[in-house]
Image: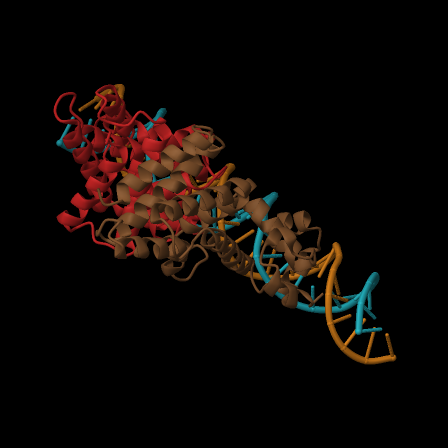
Length: 205
Length: 205
DNA sequence: CACTAAAAAATGAACGTTCATTCATTATTT
DNA sequence: AAATAATGAATGAACGTTCATTTTTTAGTG
């Protein structure tokens, strides 16, 4: 059972983790947060969904809230890795920009639970997280690309926060609207229009 | 005491409402949601902050959750009214666009509690709200302006959801970053750069 | 391989606390 | 004095956490 601490280094992706008890608990929390939300989440649910006894939870986590923080780190790591994969250090910056946005959107479309979890975590002040700084780790891959574009004078020389807000903020709302069926991101043409509009916001005109 | 049902029609703004018990409760919840969040909000806190007895709450609300829904409607109404004030049916659409964004941002800068409350409410699925449709009421004023810009062929003919996402999504993230001290929206030049970038995203190029 | 004993993992009933809600009583207004 | 508003102690359900017990795994021995 304590093989897990070894495997967890390799299989960061929850979907492919060995199905030991701890992973079962993490998975069940991810699923439950999406379906019932933080507010209604309780230990009985977690244990039932994970198929373990109530006490088992406390072999792997100190408090109920700890699982949330650990899950957040896993989820953010996976997201950042997916987006960073789309980054290249050379090549047309507009193409890289588009590829990274595409990677981010595809990630969330394939993992609705991840999106819902991150959203709820981000907007719950003083809920589980100790410092607000954590929220912005999610922006690191985009930040990297943006810095490069600025250096090449292809992306506007305006405060980073503005550029990040436009890229990340609008993307988040797009995905929310997709799940609310206000728009379909399955349509490649729609996605392309979105990337183009974002690009025009941040690109030197 | 039941004068309130009369005044509440006139003084939508919580800040200027007569300080009867019900309003005291609404105010205390608004404040507490910002400081401790939905998750830690309990009846003892609400009563203490409002300066009423525990039982008093139930003279005005059926359940704990009802106050949240009622508060959301009040807060959204105030926000929409503030933004709609900046709308004019004639005049340069880019100027109107900028004025509305400015009104929205000024509203949230002056009312941090309102921003925090809306954010938490919006991102908590199945928490209090019955239907997800409610979330998009917040977009109505911007939607109105956008429709007009589209008709004049000054705003891109792309799906509404894309335009709304870019405008509203990025604005939200900007405000979050402002409160996280990543950028200062008190700086007029910064705001102007943000509006300009947003405009370039949505405007016909 | 079989047997065994020690170690580790898992269990779930029990515990103490917290919390939303109620209601008999008191205070205030009409 | 009747009606309305407000109170806060009491209630019982729900919840997170613990721990004595049971089950499973590991390691050692013949």
